[in-house]
Image 1 (cartoon, rainbow, N blue to C red):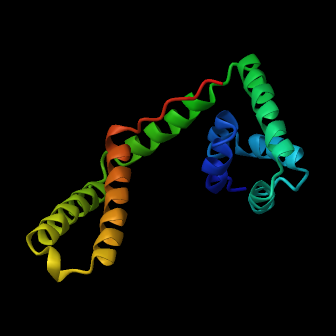
Image 2: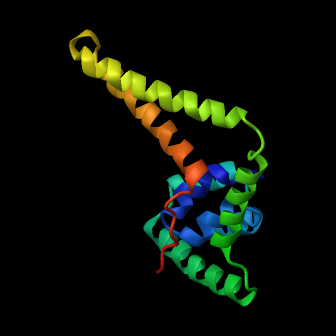
Length: 158
């Protein structure tokens, strides 16, 4: 099951469970959320149930988050450490591959060139399109920076 897409949706309410959804504990975290929402533990069903969740169900998810944190502490499992190890593994896999570096450099260069071109002749470009492209490129640069230098993720304390 692929729960990665639900990570941010669930993470807004239950950060520990949300972080677990994208990693090796995804199935367990998905079952916890599905039990609270009363649906099948599949990403599609949980996504639909989250979109129509009642305030009472959201409160139950918060309670499940606390119980999940306690259970992970009993088992000495640090969900955020597992997530960081997963990122480090991805970085180490690409350490000897120059493809990602070349793409990162090309994307950064393209971003800077686009800003330069738009700055020189701002009247020659429709602003809606400029904003759309700048937003997309800025998001890509953010992803590249996070990959190479790490994100600014800090676990939330409740």
